[in-house]
Length: 167
Image (cartoon, rainbow, N blue to C red; front, side, top):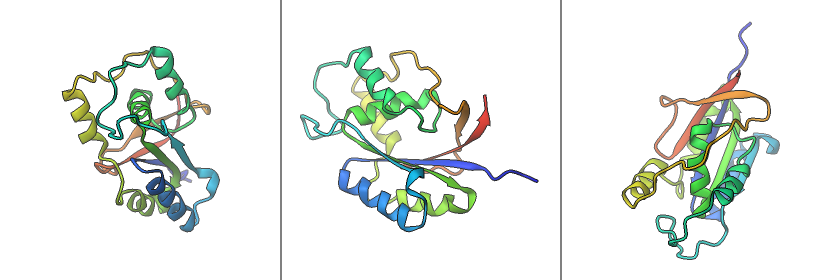
């Protein structure tokens, strides 16, 4: 008998309210609360613009602090730093673990108004001098599993990860 696949669907929001609304819609579709996570970034962005940040470059310790807040979320280590940068700049991350049957509906809920186009934003940051990961990343999935982004089931504003395979 084939085991059901596990998915993790993630989206970023600029507004806490939009993120909380997405969480409420996920719970309303009967996804248990313990499978839904809201991770707030820096609550106060001094410039009010997620594409612009002050001239202070975060230290490796500050960056690892944000990365540590992502511990246990199910996406690959090479993307963990980028999510951390979004959080550092004030975004809110909503992450939900779903089954095959729940996947597409969760994707639709998270791909709604207020969701950040991560790739477009990262391209603007790179054009402004952001270079991406600057600190070594380590495996952080507590259950020792590997999760991989599925480009076929992801969208520009929502990423979908297939996972659960042991390292």
